[in-house]
Length: 527
Image (cartoon, rainbow, N blue to C red):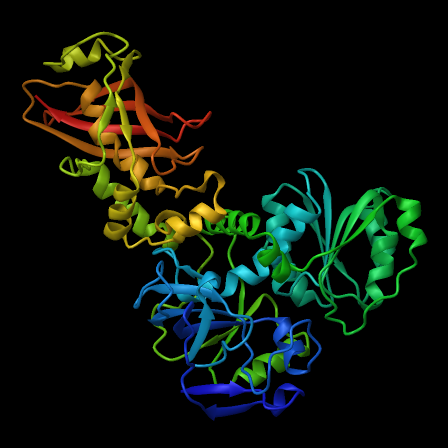
């Protein structure tokens, strides 16, 4: 196979494009055919022997990949050949194939392309851990991002906006700051031409910033520290400027502020449960279109050394990507969320419109028969339905969502994320040790339950026509019991003889304080 090799420590120009043997798998490893690999600043440090981790020579840089599993070790049970995955390999990614320990490999959601999968976790994972776990940033606080146009910096700008902070982006050129503005920065500072400390003072009306996220270091660190508010938090992430700053610690004393180290790589191994929750949060933000990666440039495998040189020279805005051949699926996301959500939109429409999809599997069974809150009733005409407008249709019986059904839904939708199907990892990492049901599995149970509380007689046709304003406030776990409560809000007759029923539905679980699904259902009937 082809690979970019570091045979001796040095600059990107010393790397070689070589033919090497395929990696040999250990018992708990998988072999991935690489589709895309992200370029990150630690790659630059690794080849110079300046990083915390010291891979044995020769090695390939590249620590964040996506691709397809080609082979699994004998001890790997939750992943399979042919599965689309992303992996945090540390190094080895600038190659046609890479072997990775199975617990650092994650299935790619079906709506996510290879480019998005390989470009998101390191930068957004670092920024989210910094802002959420270390700084505990709060809505209304002020966030200053140094090096805001880089991968982690731009992720912090976008996450800061999503988390409700006022974001000040600091970078070295107008071009870089324009990208930050597009990502939601409220204020901009060019620290090559502006007085950083004075600009902070002006923008915050003398109060100072609550949180500084610093990936640059060097000469900008001290003025940023001097611009902190009382009880501020200074997040130390990296030193892209090349110099580790020597800070006067009396400033921390005078400002009552904290200086916090942020090392996402170690956090992900020391606190795996919290890291997994962060990943779940980030995937949800990607799927909803709240965050998206800014792709600076795409390089071929042979051009990888140039990607690292551009990273060293601080030319990269957002993420640089190495993409291998046959990348028809690995196109960068537009960030709108539209393209990513289409498979789920199709699934939702199919599920809600096809009255035959009702998940009558034997392992989903009623475990408690409850009468309707309004007593037994049958609807034989449109007039009967109109009399019910504004009133409760009642409450369905309880239904159990088993792991077997979650598995079948995963197979039907090709959504094999470990949080749904890997019982061993769920037992170790998820709250309560149980797998989560897919949100759209919960929604797909509506037809089964709605017919129980909306008994129709004499109809020629009854179709699940559509759904509006779907939300999943709380998760459903394997083995949970759920039921449906519904109110008929409107009846709309059409000249063609069809009638639309608008139903406000709430699904609740026996283990959650919040609803597990809230939606407006539209059912089409014809008497």
